[in-house]
Amino acid sequence: QSLQTQLVSVGPLDIYFLLDSFSGFFLGIIAVMAMVSAFYSIEYMEHYDDYGLRSYYANYPIFVLGMAGIVTVDDLSTGFTIAWQAMTITSYFLVRFEHRKPEIVKAANKYLVLMELAWLFIVVAAFIAGTSMGDSIHAVTRSLGGTHGAVPYIVYGLIFLGFGFKAAVFPFGQMWLPDAHSIAPSPISALLSGVMIKTGVYGIIRTFFWMVPHTETFHFSGAFWGALIASFGVVTLFIGTVQSMKQSQSKRLLAYSSIGQVGYIIFGIGAALFMVNAESASLQMLGLIALVGVIYHVLNHAVFKGLLFLTSGSVLYSTGTKDLNKLGGLINLMPVTALVAGIASLSISGVPPFSGFASKWTLVSTSLLAGSEVLFLVIFGIIALFTSAVTLSCYVKFFGMTFTSAGAEWSIGREVKEVPAGMLIPKLFLTALCLLQGLIPFFYFQTIIGIFANSGGSAVSTAFRDMHVQDHVFNSAMGVSMSIPGLSSVSSVAVPAVLLLVFAAAFGLAALIRRAGGSKEREVPTWLCGYQDLTDKTRYRDKSMFSALKNLLYWTGGNVKE
Image 1 (cartoon, rainbow, N blue to C red):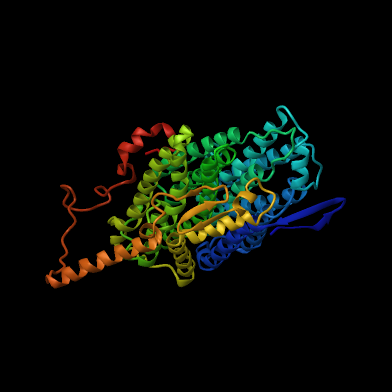
Image 2: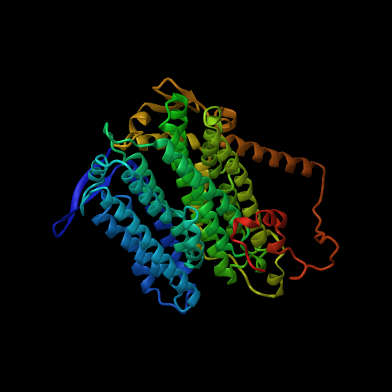
């Protein structure tokens, strides 16, 4: 259910808050990730000996409150501005925490300017719609219903532009995200990538599924906006992921990867918007399922990307470097961190039975299933599917060069050890969520359906109230039932849990056969392809990983200078 109440008056202006299941979902993500990152910060921030921590802990709670405000204020003017500025200004100081380094200050300044520009786009759009300071979203929607001609396109376009900047949609994300997210302290990077950019996603969904007037004189072209948003999304997911593959620094690789993963979400929003506004009942059903996949991927990405940044932070804490070319061999020195990094890498790569598989496959499969009626969605789905393979290559490189390759530098007597328990516990908690969210996807599907059904006022609320999941099949009162290939039978989805048990049984059987045969382990030197000794000159470098693919996709940008 939803609750709208006037909580604060600023002079003659009223600030309204709207709390429904949809905003509550985002609040939950903010709360959980903020607590995890705060707990991680206690130990992690101790290695910043040269910087005082008072500013960090002063800005941190205001930053979190600002994000919470974005998903609960019910206007695009007064309350929205207060929340946006609280989020932006405090995150600016957190990003520039190491303010004695000129390159960090420069990146933080760029971040601040672009976020203020994004805010300006959104506020100007609200005034073009004919609203006044303090008007609720409902009032903005009502005013928008009285506009005609190019005005609605300008309003929706500016709002998408503003929230697109925040969500890191291509090409806006490349302007600020890789620099800001890679230089911030790792707990803040986890919040920026895992949570803050989702406020942009929240704004886009609220705008195009809630802020749509239902009047006879107003025409909203869901097909136009859906196709446009999906196009931005598929370009974002492809370019961002390919650029991630090219990076040689761990946090920069993760930052570009965030752009790619948000691209999946934006692509899903556009595809869902296009399909729910179609005349075909089957397309409408696919649109609803795609929207479920969007929210599921928002949740999954918040968890595994937050975990990946905390993992990268742990490596930086222990080794003092983010350069993948200087890492390697840490699996024996930091085994717990290596384990959680492996699970997070498999999750973001969409490997079953980990969390990213179900949400990504839902987005891809709904687009492919729409192929008989909408060709461009099939093409987009194929691009998204190929990009998942590129994502896997990114994290083969990230995990391999950090943990499993031979690190010559660590064999020269430098002491590297596992991080303290205070940094391990938050990572283990997020790892458990990665596994849980991957093993019971239909529980989350049903929960997300309930979120939309209980959040009134949207263009899809009624349709979701008539929708439910039974025996891994989506059913609707429209008389349409659909299942997702690969997620529709007990053997394949009861799911990924069964797949995990099969893998465990296979490994167990292999161990029994090995013991029964009396085989013994023996250690031999690694075959070095003709080299006799492994040194910094003979080990694989970043430039050698997937070099042919990187050369083929040089035109996508994000190339690292040798």
